[in-house]
Length: 112
Image (tube, rainbow, N blue to C red; front, side, top):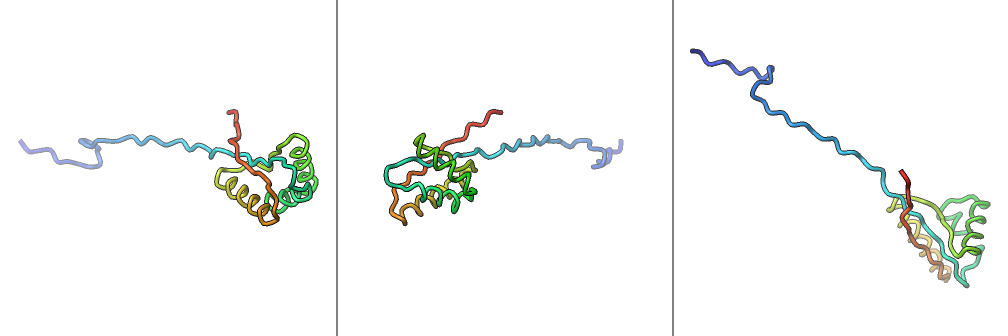
């Protein structure tokens, strides 16, 4: 009896493996928070917000007032790498101008 010829096109004898598609999750977001202190001037906080966080003057003033009145204010929400970079730039600029401006990161709570 002749042996059957193997035809790759018919798929006989081939094991198939299903690929699971990994669901891509959006990157987690982080809030950059400026904290009030008794030494950093309000003008300097506005300067940091316009120079580093690219806020318009009116929004920078609103954030500065929140920092002044509530003790803290959000400079913006970014992916972790960008938030860390902006916070480091703000701290470096404050140090350069001899201000003790505290700038921290907090995870942004996203309801989904």
